[in-house]
Image (cartoon, rainbow, N blue to C red; front, top):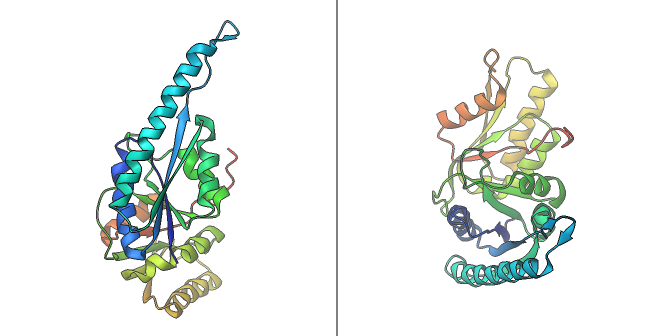
Length: 255
């Protein structure tokens, strides 16, 4: 059940994408919206081992004033998006953004964010996404455009490999899948799975159907040296999927 949505806002153009998705989800689930502002404060500048306290204090005051202005602006924007909303503003340094976002998401059902990209300014911070996935215990709903889906989804695709991460993603996604007209469970690498793996795939479909979700299973072969991510994207596009459910990580963050 999705009843509390957390959306991180920073005053950039990316907020339009975040809020468009939040509005759709709030209508779809009749959810409360939490606008989270991590107002970034300037770090002290050290010159010749000395901190200019006067300049730093002035910059801190400017940052806090900007934060209050964004908070008021956000309150007004949220009033028109959802019947129930609140704004939480936290003044903090840049390196604290990820930890604080994860902490605030623990009392919500999902974090609404932007898709990750290294070629666009309208992106979600990578460390915020990672920290939320690992430390918040909540899923992330990533959006790529301002398409409306307050009436539900046309075709949801579940990227399934039988892992713990995929299993958790399916459980978290049940409310979304219930609002989808079509649901496909996609297993990539067909032809190499064991009898046990095939049985688990069938059991997942049965599990979803017991939740009232009329899912179908499709197995797709991995072509040559093509990586699974590329195959997955191609298959989602071919099926005109507008929702992709998948686990976040299958390994430790240690690099």
